[in-house]
Image (cartoon, rainbow, N blue to C red; front, side):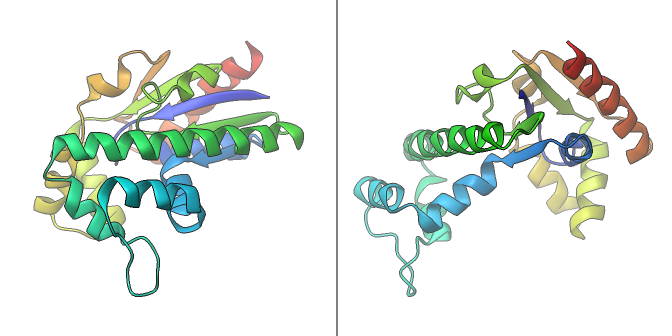
Length: 198
């Protein structure tokens, strides 16, 4: 099974790239979704977070993500500690999921992760791809996709790391300034076929 790592900021076109992986019979692992699932179901992770940050439960007994967020976002040191704990659990679970796909005979899997290289997940990949796009294009896409104001879309874009963060260290950088989704999808298909044939 070939494993591809895909990273990039919001609104750049990662979803289009991931759909092309699925069209080739590949599995897609969204590390954000893996982490959110672990927050709900992994008792070890929940215990570790509460040891680090104190009581975090809501009325239903689940981890209150908003409470956790408000505790860490004002403090770079706390955010770094949270990221380290979250990353360790997410990487472990992602490795397990990849192994399940390998056992199931999948030809291809893509790991979608913001911290693809720092987490060590990039080392599992045959190739790593950074999907980036000019900020003004990303803003338009986010506004259309989520129905939010331009001001809010810009605040989301500015809050994310710059293109260099994503492209540095990746094997392939795809700049998605395509006028249509289909045009970008065809670029992605060319790259994926090269990786699969390599």
